[in-house]
Length: 485
Ligand code: NAD
Image (cartoon, rainbow, N blue to C red; front, side):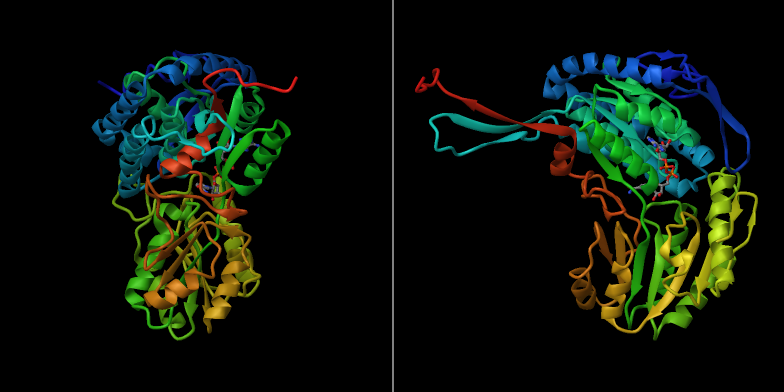
């Protein structure tokens, strides 16, 4: 079976069948080659309203399906992700500009997410509550109804499927809106997989488009939960709109993640961890290492090692060359990255490596001699830039880490005892000791605090059941109760 090569999906949206959207069509461009990869269909707000109504109808039957039937669809989807891994990886490389290793992580994680989700339909969905009243009292979880999933361009497949799979498994219908730049990897692939896995028509619908389609999804009356992954400014708008309509919104937003190198740490290994954390997928990951805090005894050598790596790492089109870094997603992002780097240098920062680009290919960059007020240190850059500053005491490191409004991921490299003591003092959704900041596993709680979002909404049965179901209090008596009037 071909997943995408028969092109039945080209130029269309998916509402249970592949059909024309009212938003016209758009070209999907490869950031690496500039080639047009495909035409995709766009939805408009009227498509969204119709899809939400249809999803609401389809959801009732899906929620009533046997748990074993829902689990079987999720298992088949997981197997299909494995069977089509090669085709999927090829798309993620060309559409998102990912190196093969990163694209491979996306395909494997997508399968894992489906297998994890396959256990949710038969997981306990409630509790028996002790009561002083003469009745049985239960707390039970029920599907929320229709869930909207809005996802970004950087890890398009994973950041869509990690909401889609558990929401479906728990008996919801899902309306999926990927980023317009990565509609195939973040949407078409998932819709095709679930179509082949036998998910009933209408339960998963794909509504490609821009912010207007996302906003229409948040407004649609049938949508009860919004699972949004993207930037902090867009997340704020989604959160505000959801609150106006009294809907729950799970917001997974930006980060400016610190990596702390403790005194006595193995410098070569620390520099390798720091390089990977900052430059994997060109630094376009919410968990990217955005701030390197290095003990003053190691700082100069650390900067030199990082700069040496930066000078030698190959940058190019991962679809045709063996490279460590691919392209930035588009020219707007390149301008933003370069603007931050150049302004930071103008403010007195030192460019220890990189800071140049050819088209969308930005060289891995190291900035040192910074103050914590400089833009490259205080802002999320979302590019391959490693800003480094020294610290002298652990108290100072804790204070600097805590100054950021974000709280997604922190990495501590070096002595485990010292690192654990530090971890106890750091508010962050994730702390990784002796690993860099980028890590995600299907069964581990994932989420950030503060400007990084509304907390752990992914990973593990508890988090997913909390995220994608509503609680119902149910009481039962053997016969109608007596009342005083
Ligand atoms: P973005 O916020 O511009 O777009 C994300 C998605 O939201 C896209 O599908 C977009 O079309 C949609 N959107 C934009 N405005 C909207 C609105 N007003 N209403 C509804 N939908 C809207 O983000 P981006 O630039 O594509 O992605 C990069 C950002 O995402 C970074 O800040 C990164 O840190 C963050 N991110 C966070 C996580 C996480 O799990 N915390 C993961 C990956 C990326």
